Length: 69
Image (cartoon, rainbow, N blue to C red):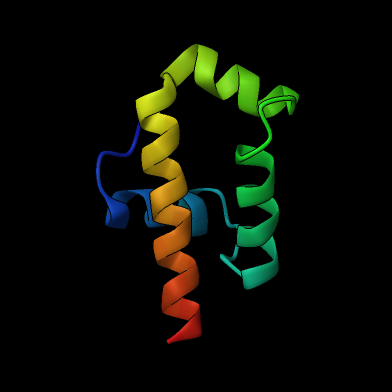
């Protein structure tokens, strides 16, 4: 399943995968997603496209803002 909303995405990460959305984790993922040379990012774009990459980046940024609030 590919999440199509922020709440669904958070559920996938935090509940289904059991990964806490900590500031450190979010920053690590944003750095990787911003690196076009990162193999995982290249694979993500190949499978899901640039538009979905931008959406995922946006959701990570939203999650980081929530932590900072």
